[in-house]
Image (cartoon, rainbow, N blue to C red; front, side, top):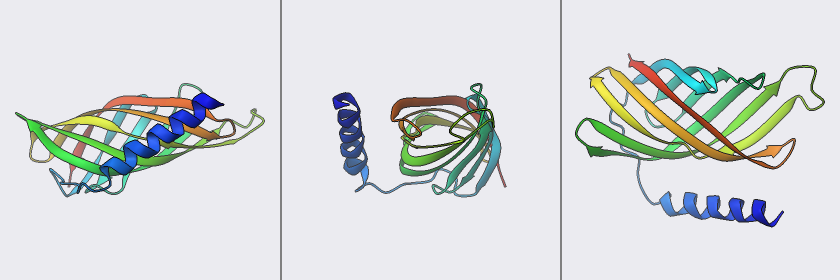
Length: 148
């Protein structure tokens, strides 16, 4: 229990420390693509907010997430980096006792714009699952988005 409270407190401090920064989109258009990892599915990006994921997990649930990028900045060369905060909804298969899961996530990642309208990205999103159980959770994947 103490470890969970510590993780929640650290996540809150981390998020608050970035609240004063403004997000700077490398590409402010609408991006549509895929993400492969845990979970795997579709990725939609509308500027810095929202960044949506509609995916499925190897643990047999549908994964929906919505993130807001607090910081999106030039890293060097062709790379940008980002950090954000978001929530996720997990819908488990019907055989489970608790069919719904809710959690918080902190996506951190890199972007590479191959051309103006094509982005390759990778992200790791540590977080905490709040419902049905309180537990540390991590999502990760690589993806491709095409901007229209």
